[in-house]
Length: 228
Image (tube, one colour):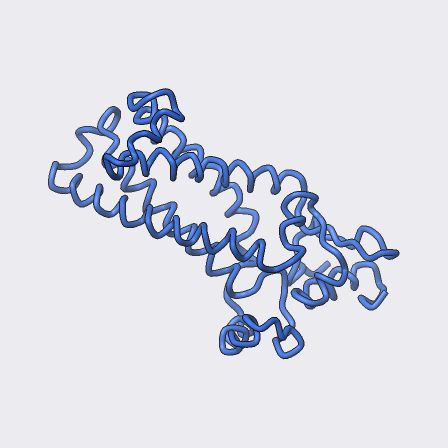
């Protein structure tokens, strides 16, 4: 049996009347929310140390000492959680020719003129940008974070290198905040998207409008047309 081009094994059309499509299994939804929660905790604790005016945020963690200890530990949890998700999703997030065409018609994307856009697999170019942006930034954050984690890796690098690591860590943190905001905005902006990560399903209309190749492939598994 040929490997699916646009879908994961767990993706399927659950019902026909009305059409309901399973987009994310329970495991990957839990994986996603663990990643999201740990990222938010890291953003809050990291901002607390970014500037004295934000130090009050350490109170959410029981004080500065606790926040300083918890921040790198949560960072490790984020890295492991995201890597588990990466293993599951990287293949369908590889660039395709359709992505270039989608980006060239970004005006239609913003205006909601989906009928003018190319048919897409499970993810569009914007979603892929967020995926790979998060991947690169999380790797940069964990590497630079280890370099400045003096409790366990104090002798790993020289003091000048650690200073550069602090700067790199700070810049990557700002970048990932921006990518995270974009991700959340897009989830609310595209109506019907959020339920995919809460209920695990989307409507047939949503799938046909935004990810038609993905839906066609799932319909092919049932040996029935997507119009049903």
